[in-house]
Image 1 (cartoon, rainbow, N blue to C red):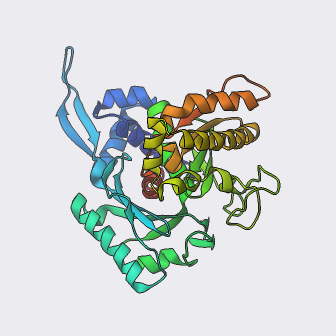
Image 2: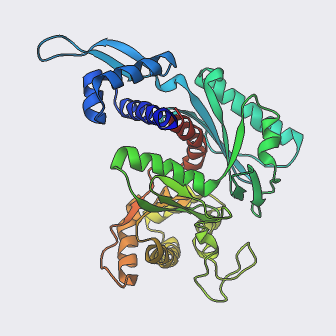
Length: 376
Protein backbone atom coordinates (compact mmCIF):
# COMPACT_ATOMS: atom_id res chain seq x y z
CA UNK A 1 0.00 0.00 0.00
CA UNK A 2 2.76 2.42 0.96
CA UNK A 3 4.58 1.72 -2.30
CA UNK A 4 1.42 2.47 -4.28
CA UNK A 5 0.94 5.77 -2.45
CA UNK A 6 4.55 6.74 -3.02
CA UNK A 7 4.30 5.87 -6.71
CA UNK A 8 1.19 8.01 -7.09
CA UNK A 9 2.97 10.89 -5.38
CA UNK A 10 6.02 10.43 -7.61
CA UNK A 11 3.90 10.44 -10.77
CA UNK A 12 1.90 13.48 -9.68
CA UNK A 13 5.12 15.32 -8.87
CA UNK A 14 6.62 14.34 -12.23
CA UNK A 15 3.57 15.54 -14.17
CA UNK A 16 3.53 18.83 -12.27
CA UNK A 17 7.25 19.54 -12.75
CA UNK A 18 7.11 18.83 -16.48
CA UNK A 19 4.06 21.04 -16.90
CA UNK A 20 5.60 23.78 -14.75
CA UNK A 21 8.61 23.92 -17.08
CA UNK A 22 6.38 24.74 -20.08
CA UNK A 23 3.80 27.42 -20.82
CA UNK A 24 1.18 24.94 -21.94
CA UNK A 25 0.99 21.24 -22.82
CA UNK A 26 -1.52 18.64 -23.93
CA UNK A 27 -2.03 15.32 -22.14
CA UNK A 28 -0.29 13.58 -25.00
CA UNK A 29 2.75 15.86 -24.78
CA UNK A 30 2.97 15.31 -21.02
CA UNK A 31 2.75 11.55 -21.52
CA UNK A 32 5.62 11.65 -24.03
CA UNK A 33 7.74 13.89 -21.79
CA UNK A 34 7.22 11.80 -18.64
CA UNK A 35 6.98 8.30 -20.10
CA UNK A 36 3.69 7.80 -18.22
CA UNK A 37 0.57 6.28 -19.74
CA UNK A 38 -2.19 8.61 -20.91
CA UNK A 39 -4.66 7.36 -18.23
CA UNK A 40 -2.06 8.02 -15.51
CA UNK A 41 -1.42 11.54 -16.86
CA UNK A 42 -5.17 12.19 -17.03
CA UNK A 43 -5.68 11.07 -13.43
CA UNK A 44 -2.84 13.21 -12.13
CA UNK A 45 -3.95 16.26 -14.07
CA UNK A 46 -7.41 15.88 -12.58
CA UNK A 47 -5.95 15.76 -9.06
CA UNK A 48 -3.79 18.84 -9.74
CA UNK A 49 -6.80 20.72 -11.13
CA UNK A 50 -8.78 19.84 -8.00
CA UNK A 51 -5.91 21.19 -5.88
CA UNK A 52 -6.11 24.48 -7.74
CA UNK A 53 -2.58 24.11 -9.14
CA UNK A 54 -3.38 23.39 -12.80
CA UNK A 55 -6.03 24.69 -15.18
CA UNK A 56 -7.36 23.64 -18.56
CA UNK A 57 -6.72 26.32 -21.16
CA UNK A 58 -8.85 25.23 -24.10
CA UNK A 59 -7.62 23.61 -27.28
CA UNK A 60 -4.10 23.70 -28.66
CA UNK A 61 -3.22 24.19 -32.31
CA UNK A 62 -3.26 20.99 -34.31
CA UNK A 63 -1.63 19.94 -37.57
CA UNK A 64 -4.59 17.75 -38.33
CA UNK A 65 -7.34 15.81 -36.64
CA UNK A 66 -8.99 16.67 -33.34
CA UNK A 67 -7.54 19.60 -31.40
CA UNK A 68 -6.03 18.54 -28.07
CA UNK A 69 -7.00 20.19 -24.78
CA UNK A 70 -4.24 22.26 -23.24
CA UNK A 71 -3.17 22.48 -19.61
CA UNK A 72 -0.93 24.86 -17.68
CA UNK A 73 0.21 25.41 -14.13
CA UNK A 74 -1.31 28.25 -12.15
CA UNK A 75 2.08 29.62 -11.19
CA UNK A 76 0.77 32.12 -8.67
CA UNK A 77 -1.41 29.58 -6.88
CA UNK A 78 1.19 29.65 -4.13
CA UNK A 79 3.97 32.08 -3.29
CA UNK A 80 6.55 32.68 -0.61
CA UNK A 81 8.55 35.57 0.80
CA UNK A 82 12.29 35.83 1.31
CA UNK A 83 14.10 38.36 3.49
CA UNK A 84 17.84 38.92 3.29
CA UNK A 85 18.99 40.84 6.33
CA UNK A 86 22.43 41.92 7.51
CA UNK A 87 23.45 44.17 10.37
CA UNK A 88 22.89 47.25 8.19
CA UNK A 89 20.73 46.28 5.19
CA UNK A 90 17.52 44.50 4.22
CA UNK A 91 16.01 43.23 0.98
CA UNK A 92 12.70 41.40 0.47
CA UNK A 93 11.46 39.29 -2.47
CA UNK A 94 8.27 37.41 -3.32
CA UNK A 95 8.44 34.37 -5.62
CA UNK A 96 5.85 32.04 -7.15
CA UNK A 97 5.80 28.29 -7.78
CA UNK A 98 7.88 28.66 -10.94
CA UNK A 99 10.60 30.47 -8.99
CA UNK A 100 9.74 33.72 -10.73
CA UNK A 101 10.32 36.90 -8.74
CA UNK A 102 6.94 38.62 -8.51
CA UNK A 103 8.16 41.60 -6.55
CA UNK A 104 11.33 42.70 -4.80
CA UNK A 105 12.41 45.67 -2.77
CA UNK A 106 15.58 47.64 -3.25
CA UNK A 107 18.42 46.83 -0.90
CA UNK A 108 17.97 49.51 1.72
CA UNK A 109 19.87 50.61 4.78
CA UNK A 110 18.33 49.09 7.88
CA UNK A 111 19.84 48.80 11.34
CA UNK A 112 19.06 45.38 12.78
CA UNK A 113 18.44 45.28 16.53
CA UNK A 114 17.06 42.58 18.76
CA UNK A 115 14.04 44.56 19.93
CA UNK A 116 10.28 44.81 19.33
CA UNK A 117 10.54 47.92 17.18
CA UNK A 118 12.94 46.26 14.75
CA UNK A 119 10.89 43.07 14.35
CA UNK A 120 7.70 45.09 13.89
CA UNK A 121 9.41 47.18 11.22
CA UNK A 122 10.54 44.05 9.33
CA UNK A 123 7.03 42.58 9.60
CA UNK A 124 5.50 45.80 8.28
CA UNK A 125 7.85 45.72 5.28
CA UNK A 126 6.83 42.12 4.54
CA UNK A 127 3.12 42.96 4.77
CA UNK A 128 3.62 45.96 2.49
CA UNK A 129 5.38 44.01 -0.27
CA UNK A 130 2.81 41.19 -0.05
CA UNK A 131 0.06 43.79 -0.50
CA UNK A 132 1.96 45.38 -3.40
CA UNK A 133 2.39 42.01 -5.09
CA UNK A 134 -1.36 41.35 -4.72
CA UNK A 135 -0.87 37.62 -4.08
CA UNK A 136 -3.43 35.64 -2.13
CA UNK A 137 -2.23 35.69 1.48
CA UNK A 138 -3.90 32.30 2.01
CA UNK A 139 -1.52 30.91 -0.63
CA UNK A 140 1.70 32.16 0.99
CA UNK A 141 3.76 29.13 1.96
CA UNK A 142 5.98 30.94 4.44
CA UNK A 143 8.69 33.51 5.00
CA UNK A 144 12.37 32.61 4.66
CA UNK A 145 14.84 34.72 6.63
CA UNK A 146 18.42 34.79 5.31
CA UNK A 147 21.11 35.88 7.77
CA UNK A 148 24.94 35.78 7.79
CA UNK A 149 25.06 33.20 10.57
CA UNK A 150 25.44 29.47 11.12
CA UNK A 151 21.99 27.88 11.31
CA UNK A 152 20.71 24.71 12.94
CA UNK A 153 18.03 23.85 10.40
CA UNK A 154 16.55 21.03 12.45
CA UNK A 155 15.67 23.47 15.25
CA UNK A 156 15.24 26.64 13.15
CA UNK A 157 17.80 28.49 15.27
CA UNK A 158 21.11 30.29 14.93
CA UNK A 159 24.11 28.61 16.50
CA UNK A 160 26.85 31.13 15.63
CA UNK A 161 26.35 34.80 14.84
CA UNK A 162 29.32 37.13 14.91
CA UNK A 163 28.60 39.63 12.12
CA UNK A 164 24.94 40.32 12.88
CA UNK A 165 23.66 40.83 16.41
CA UNK A 166 20.80 38.38 16.02
CA UNK A 167 19.53 36.01 18.75
CA UNK A 168 19.28 32.26 18.31
CA UNK A 169 15.48 32.45 18.13
CA UNK A 170 15.31 35.29 15.60
CA UNK A 171 12.84 33.34 13.41
CA UNK A 172 10.43 32.84 16.30
CA UNK A 173 10.60 36.51 17.29
CA UNK A 174 9.79 37.67 13.77
CA UNK A 175 7.05 35.05 13.37
CA UNK A 176 5.18 36.56 16.32
CA UNK A 177 4.61 39.69 14.21
CA UNK A 178 3.48 37.89 11.04
CA UNK A 179 0.58 35.65 10.02
CA UNK A 180 3.06 33.34 8.26
CA UNK A 181 5.52 30.67 9.33
CA UNK A 182 9.15 31.85 9.40
CA UNK A 183 12.23 29.72 8.76
CA UNK A 184 15.81 30.98 9.08
CA UNK A 185 18.62 30.11 6.63
CA UNK A 186 22.31 30.84 6.24
CA UNK A 187 22.72 33.58 3.61
CA UNK A 188 25.26 31.73 1.46
CA UNK A 189 23.21 28.52 1.53
CA UNK A 190 20.10 30.50 0.54
CA UNK A 191 21.95 32.19 -2.33
CA UNK A 192 23.31 28.82 -3.44
CA UNK A 193 19.78 27.42 -3.43
CA UNK A 194 18.64 30.24 -5.73
CA UNK A 195 21.51 29.45 -8.12
CA UNK A 196 20.60 25.77 -7.92
CA UNK A 197 17.11 26.58 -9.17
CA UNK A 198 18.50 28.75 -11.95
CA UNK A 199 21.14 26.20 -12.99
CA UNK A 200 18.69 23.29 -13.08
CA UNK A 201 16.04 25.17 -15.06
CA UNK A 202 18.20 27.20 -17.44
CA UNK A 203 21.47 25.37 -17.99
CA UNK A 204 20.61 21.78 -17.18
CA UNK A 205 21.25 19.73 -14.07
CA UNK A 206 24.68 19.97 -12.44
CA UNK A 207 25.54 17.04 -10.17
CA UNK A 208 28.15 18.95 -8.18
CA UNK A 209 28.92 22.62 -7.84
CA UNK A 210 30.17 25.10 -5.27
CA UNK A 211 28.55 28.51 -4.81
CA UNK A 212 31.13 31.04 -3.59
CA UNK A 213 29.53 34.09 -1.99
CA UNK A 214 31.76 37.17 -1.97
CA UNK A 215 29.79 39.61 0.15
CA UNK A 216 30.76 41.53 3.29
CA UNK A 217 31.71 38.12 4.56
CA UNK A 218 32.74 35.14 2.43
CA UNK A 219 30.62 32.02 2.51
CA UNK A 220 29.72 29.07 0.36
CA UNK A 221 27.28 26.32 -0.46
CA UNK A 222 27.97 22.82 -1.75
CA UNK A 223 25.29 21.68 -4.19
CA UNK A 224 25.26 17.92 -4.70
CA UNK A 225 22.62 16.16 -6.79
CA UNK A 226 20.26 19.16 -6.59
CA UNK A 227 20.53 19.46 -2.82
CA UNK A 228 22.45 21.78 -0.51
CA UNK A 229 24.88 19.76 1.57
CA UNK A 230 24.79 21.22 5.10
CA UNK A 231 27.24 18.99 6.95
CA UNK A 232 26.79 17.60 10.47
CA UNK A 233 26.62 21.01 12.15
CA UNK A 234 25.36 23.25 9.35
CA UNK A 235 28.90 24.52 8.78
CA UNK A 236 29.73 23.00 5.40
CA UNK A 237 31.40 25.21 2.76
CA UNK A 238 32.51 27.83 5.29
CA UNK A 239 35.30 28.77 2.92
CA UNK A 240 35.61 32.21 4.50
CA UNK A 241 37.43 30.64 7.45
CA UNK A 242 39.90 28.61 5.43
CA UNK A 243 43.33 30.10 6.06
CA UNK A 244 45.27 30.98 2.92
CA UNK A 245 47.98 33.22 4.44
CA UNK A 246 49.80 31.90 7.54
CA UNK A 247 49.81 34.60 10.25
CA UNK A 248 48.15 36.99 7.81
CA UNK A 249 45.45 39.62 8.29
CA UNK A 250 43.06 39.14 11.17
CA UNK A 251 39.59 37.79 10.45
CA UNK A 252 36.49 38.68 12.47
CA UNK A 253 36.57 35.13 13.84
CA UNK A 254 39.80 35.95 15.67
CA UNK A 255 42.05 33.80 13.49
CA UNK A 256 44.62 35.19 11.07
CA UNK A 257 44.96 34.65 7.33
CA UNK A 258 41.35 33.61 6.60
CA UNK A 259 39.82 34.03 3.16
CA UNK A 260 37.42 36.55 4.74
CA UNK A 261 40.31 38.92 5.40
CA UNK A 262 41.36 38.92 1.74
CA UNK A 263 38.28 38.26 -0.40
CA UNK A 264 35.29 39.91 1.29
CA UNK A 265 33.57 42.72 -0.59
CA UNK A 266 34.76 45.11 2.12
CA UNK A 267 38.33 44.83 0.83
CA UNK A 268 37.15 46.75 -2.23
CA UNK A 269 34.24 48.83 -0.95
CA UNK A 270 36.23 50.30 1.94
CA UNK A 271 38.05 52.37 -0.67
CA UNK A 272 34.79 54.04 -1.74
CA UNK A 273 32.96 54.61 1.57
CA UNK A 274 31.20 51.26 1.37
CA UNK A 275 29.89 51.73 -2.17
CA UNK A 276 31.01 48.73 -4.20
CA UNK A 277 29.37 50.07 -7.37
CA UNK A 278 31.55 53.18 -7.16
CA UNK A 279 34.66 50.99 -6.92
CA UNK A 280 33.81 49.06 -10.09
CA UNK A 281 32.82 52.23 -11.93
CA UNK A 282 36.23 53.71 -11.14
CA UNK A 283 37.90 50.43 -12.07
CA UNK A 284 36.20 50.54 -15.46
CA UNK A 285 37.45 54.09 -15.97
CA UNK A 286 41.02 52.86 -15.48
CA UNK A 287 41.75 54.12 -11.96
CA UNK A 288 45.28 52.76 -11.44
CA UNK A 289 45.04 52.54 -7.65
CA UNK A 290 41.89 50.45 -7.90
CA UNK A 291 43.34 48.33 -10.70
CA UNK A 292 46.28 47.33 -8.50
CA UNK A 293 44.00 46.64 -5.54
CA UNK A 294 41.66 44.55 -7.67
CA UNK A 295 44.50 42.54 -9.17
CA UNK A 296 45.72 41.74 -5.65
CA UNK A 297 42.15 40.81 -4.71
CA UNK A 298 41.90 38.48 -7.73
CA UNK A 299 45.19 36.83 -6.77
CA UNK A 300 43.83 35.76 -3.39
CA UNK A 301 40.50 34.88 -4.95
CA UNK A 302 42.24 32.60 -7.44
CA UNK A 303 44.08 30.85 -4.59
CA UNK A 304 40.74 30.35 -2.82
CA UNK A 305 39.06 29.01 -5.95
CA UNK A 306 41.86 26.54 -6.66
CA UNK A 307 41.57 25.22 -3.10
CA UNK A 308 37.85 24.70 -3.69
CA UNK A 309 38.50 23.07 -7.06
CA UNK A 310 41.04 20.64 -5.61
CA UNK A 311 38.44 19.52 -3.05
CA UNK A 312 35.14 19.42 -4.94
CA UNK A 313 36.23 19.15 -8.61
CA UNK A 314 32.96 20.59 -9.89
CA UNK A 315 31.43 23.78 -11.25
CA UNK A 316 32.21 26.88 -9.18
CA UNK A 317 29.76 29.80 -9.27
CA UNK A 318 31.14 33.19 -8.20
CA UNK A 319 28.39 35.19 -6.50
CA UNK A 320 27.66 37.64 -3.72
CA UNK A 321 28.17 41.41 -3.90
CA UNK A 322 31.45 41.09 -5.80
CA UNK A 323 30.14 38.26 -7.98
CA UNK A 324 27.50 40.64 -9.32
CA UNK A 325 30.28 42.60 -11.04
CA UNK A 326 32.52 39.71 -12.09
CA UNK A 327 31.13 38.90 -15.53
CA UNK A 328 33.51 41.33 -17.27
CA UNK A 329 36.50 40.03 -15.28
CA UNK A 330 35.93 36.27 -15.50
CA UNK A 331 38.54 35.72 -18.20
CA UNK A 332 41.22 37.40 -16.05
CA UNK A 333 40.19 35.28 -13.09
CA UNK A 334 40.16 32.10 -15.19
CA UNK A 335 43.69 32.79 -16.39
CA UNK A 336 44.94 33.29 -12.85
CA UNK A 337 43.23 30.09 -11.70
CA UNK A 338 44.61 28.11 -14.65
CA UNK A 339 48.15 29.21 -13.74
CA UNK A 340 47.67 27.72 -10.25
CA UNK A 341 46.04 24.50 -11.40
CA UNK A 342 48.38 21.47 -11.37
CA UNK A 343 46.04 19.44 -13.60
CA UNK A 344 44.67 21.74 -16.26
CA UNK A 345 45.47 24.89 -18.19
CA UNK A 346 41.78 25.80 -18.36
CA UNK A 347 39.36 27.13 -15.76
CA UNK A 348 36.13 26.77 -17.70
CA UNK A 349 34.53 25.35 -14.56
CA UNK A 350 34.16 28.97 -13.34
CA UNK A 351 30.83 30.71 -13.91
CA UNK A 352 29.48 34.12 -12.85
CA UNK A 353 26.30 34.09 -10.77
CA UNK A 354 22.85 34.35 -12.36
CA UNK A 355 21.38 36.35 -9.47
CA UNK A 356 23.36 39.57 -9.24
CA UNK A 357 21.60 41.36 -6.38
CA UNK A 358 18.88 39.35 -4.63
CA UNK A 359 20.09 35.73 -4.47
CA UNK A 360 19.81 35.25 -0.70
CA UNK A 361 16.32 36.74 -0.46
CA UNK A 362 15.10 34.71 -3.46
CA UNK A 363 16.77 31.53 -2.20
CA UNK A 364 15.23 31.89 1.27
CA UNK A 365 11.81 32.10 -0.38
CA UNK A 366 12.48 29.24 -2.79
CA UNK A 367 13.07 26.76 0.05
CA UNK A 368 9.31 26.85 0.71
CA UNK A 369 8.52 26.43 -2.99
CA UNK A 370 10.87 23.45 -3.25
CA UNK A 371 9.35 21.76 -0.20
CA UNK A 372 5.84 22.34 -1.49
CA UNK A 373 6.54 20.86 -4.93
CA UNK A 374 8.50 17.92 -3.49
CA UNK A 375 5.56 17.01 -1.28
CA UNK A 376 2.74 17.35 -3.80
